[in-house]
Image (cartoon, rainbow, N blue to C red; front, side, top):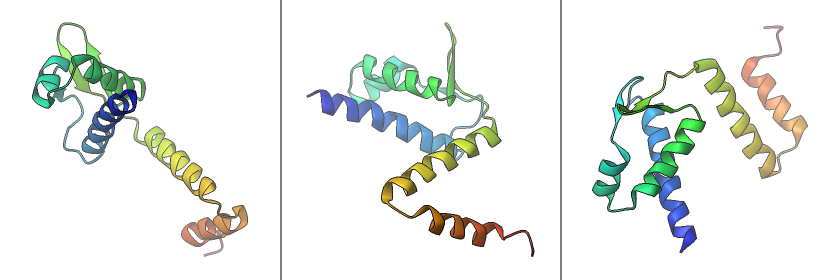
Length: 114
């Protein structure tokens, strides 16, 4: 049963991350309260609160006490670095050889002699 709860809060986290990344929620835009979102989804408010905590720790949202939850202004370079790091970890875990990866990166960026 715990796996089911975990997947629900992670689904909320991933859904909001995707919507924020796509610009469907703009910087400074207010998100639904934990209670409202939980009611709409038919889940426990604690599940939404857990998802919001993860999103806040990741810098996607911020909370203003007694006012609400809002989409955070994201440092675009820092965010791009985080995405690159995540993707490189996925690539590393897939088993690709480091030399091949470096060759691919050099092909994309060029070797500086272009």
